[in-house]
Length: 331
Image (cartoon, rainbow, N blue to C red; front, side, top):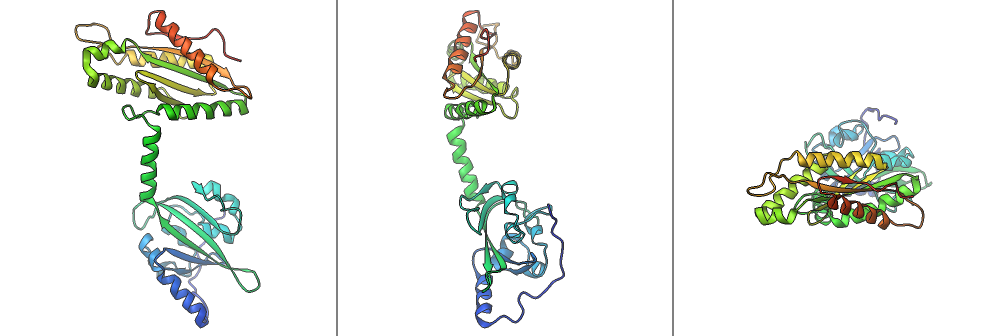
């Protein structure tokens, strides 16, 4: 990536005509944070709202190529730089979200987190960069406007959390599990990779609830959820499937690998040493059914679910506190 080098200060505009001077004055007084770069990526306008947002006064920015320092700890181009330098193909690598119409015209719009070194507050910023052309159709400057949408982003994340997380355990909920399983099935089909599934059920949980009450049962489920989650890789998903049952999606994992994960989960829960009930020397355990499939076009993951459920039933039938596997992987 080309680094942005500092330049010597220069006047904002040379002898602007009255109409141009009025436009500059209007932009400087605009309530929306904005700055303007010339074709050499030098700052020619840094309005008052931009000063307030970044904590950086205009006299430090105008005439320099140091505008990135107001937003990031390390050098990287702003949207305006990408437009001027015709590097719009880099936008997906530099920004978290790109507007749908960003690449259909000359303007760019995108969102990302900014460090805001001077203000000391990390903010989520939505930016729009629009080119300005002269009478001959040549690029003359680029205007970048900014919106601090940190609060909106936090609210969006909170709503997403409510929609996809189980309120008791903090794990993914059933809705999130169903959506993720479909997505991973489609990916496994495209990439010709195995997809494994574990169904985890707390043994004799009704008896535990009867002995310890619902509050005790809730605490037990939270401890087990934490134990299961600790065995997950970054791309695995563990969800509360319903009641005392959990489900684990293991992308690109063989049946042998799934069995290893299942046994680690079983041991970790057993080692919690959660007493099963008053007057009992037994501890809370789980039974686990595993299944692995190689997804095929025009299929769905229902067969994988059915085989994992059947394996879980066998584990229960064979005495609980154990794992059960199908004879072979599902073709």
